[in-house]
Image (cartoon, rainbow, N blue to C red; front, side):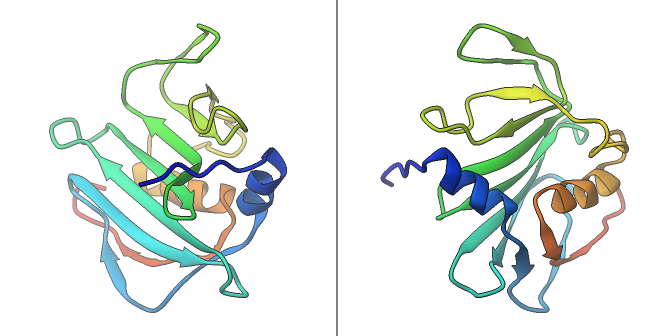
Length: 148
């Protein structure tokens, strides 16, 4: 699949844009593996994806991500894993947040802003915080699992 490059202002506009569920379908929060849920802008002109991934062995490891235009990672929260090394050599511990940066895509990470993610040890609460951070204002129906 071809790579899509956005300007920083395009990416910021997509990140700030409200995102709504497409329908009333119910999804199960993954016990391991991943779930991809389609989202859309209120005017239905932009399509987004919400990715929820959990480790297959370490269930406390995973990521929450929003994508635009099928392949462009806008915001990704990585938790329970290894530190991330930025292009400048700086190491950022886990959990950390990737936000699209023009010319680099999602290759830069920063410590999580705790004011937006106060429940980082609660996977279910953090998913809610992540959707709010990414402006998912009409969230998909996701059923909480036994190990969530």
